[in-house]
Length: 346
Image (cartoon, rainbow, N blue to C red; front, top):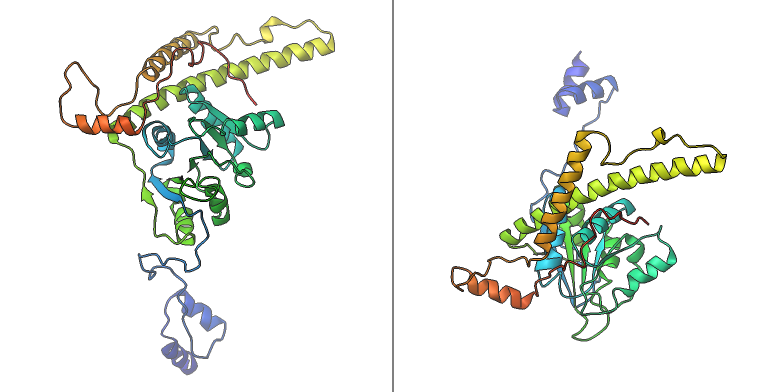
């Protein structure tokens, strides 16, 4: 008992840890090592040996929720000098994300292509060739297969739709722009950062010698317009994906019956989204309305202020200046996807 009392007096530790030390027979002086991060200062130390990036590269960030990344991406590409400066690469961390973002941007009328490891060589070359013109607003949505070895001087902007998993990947992605030497070697890197990605993003910031990147926020009114368009496009894509899956199932049944030399029971085939129930018919009607509404919106430029008969009102000069900097992107009737058209998968 005297030994226990003497030992507890030296350790000055209470609770479960004291019980463990007592049962372990620890009698020496106890030292406490605090491994928590609660005392780490809020100001982040900048790395002295920063990762090397092109001299003409400007770094930006957009802090947003995961569900609003699509709207911010669309707004950046359409309404900012950063996103409209020339061809853009949009990096995602998975092929599934590449396909989804590509489908959405295509439905919104942007000249978007995909680049990932599962694509055929011809499709990859077409995607790369679309980036060659510095005056185009081509968009290639890609995985990190494009982060190395792609040397195209006309790429103006790199957008990290998903924050990269490592600093090395961030450096290689960002290095796809601002290539070459001289005053012409300029470019932009924009990170879309959700709350769950802030830690990885700050790791990248510290590694390149920054405490944070410049904000690339979009005008509130333009962002609101972007959200409406993106929401409509997402609903249309969802409807068309359901139609596509049904078509695939029917094709499988027909092919299997043909190979087996059997007569196919038509009852096994799905009638499609416009099938038997009133709910399906209603969904098809809603999709038609979404397409009409989106087509009408895409035929109009996104503006902070609509110009009426009389050129007056607050913010008019700012709106005119913004349109001089960024040419409004309007999708003509011919560029929009045909009604009921099925999306080609790759």
